[in-house]
Image (cartoon, rainbow, N blue to C red; front, top):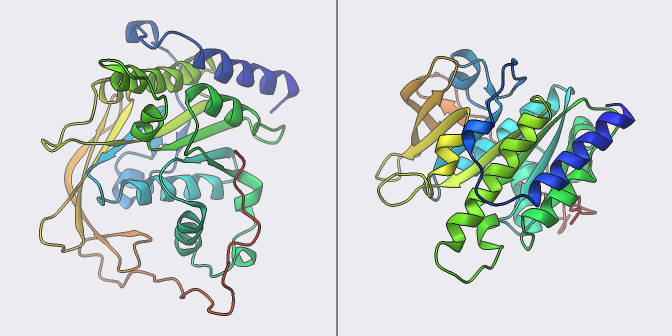
Amino acid sequence: MSTDARIRHRQILRVEAHRSMRQQLKELRYDWDLPRYAGGLYDLEVVAGGLYGLAVIAGAPKSGKSLLALRCALDTARQAETLVVYVDLELDSGTYARRLLGACGARTQGELPSWIPDHMRIIDGRDAGVEELSDGIAEQLDDQHERVLIVIDSINRLAKNQQLHRKDAYFDALSAVVSWARRAMTLSHGQIGAILVSEVNRAGQITGQDPEYAADCLVTLRPEDGGTGIVEVDFRSRSTAGFAGRRYHRDAAGVQFVPEGAGHAPAVPPPPDPDDPEPWGEPLRLL
């Protein structure tokens, strides 16, 4: 992106993080076509044409929502048109490194595809709040990419990092995260997109109302009982066709989803090299 555009996007990301937590969603309307980015699943690509705008991936623990968010990030970065900033708030660096290597079918950092360092940035946000995170993301913008996709896993952990000790503080912080992402997208005319990973409660409802109501598209994952490895996927969208109950297998390595009845074995990455105790090498962590 141009220098002026990069400065503008940095201002949007930083200023919006300091706005009040409660935002009126009716002020966040737009009248332009939003850029698409990868959906990470066959149905999300073929039926929905990919994700767009502010997307929310929701599911219970161990449902595969982080895996899907990573697949969306990698597939979008592979297209080499969008800078993907992946913010991990859940895993330590070693665990995340193994997940990334597995998703790429690699055993060492040297085997990772070249488009990952060119088009993807990874941020350790485990101790960051919204304002610190917005500053860290803004610093990753460059002159090469016109569009930015921010992936936050998960917004619930980010809200907890705010460490506010009063009634409803957690939900206010959750609202702040969603509002920041929404307004960044709106003020950049869709050039800043976001995928927010969110938890669901025991009743299967998204924690807090803001993520669901503010989203342009919502992907919900529901694992089948009994440890079958099957996940049902629902998709709702403001402007494209949706679907419900699509069934996917999570492969044994936990690195991808395969449509049920696809008729082929999922690709399993090679095991880590036992002679390389730290396959990740120099960390890509930035915060």
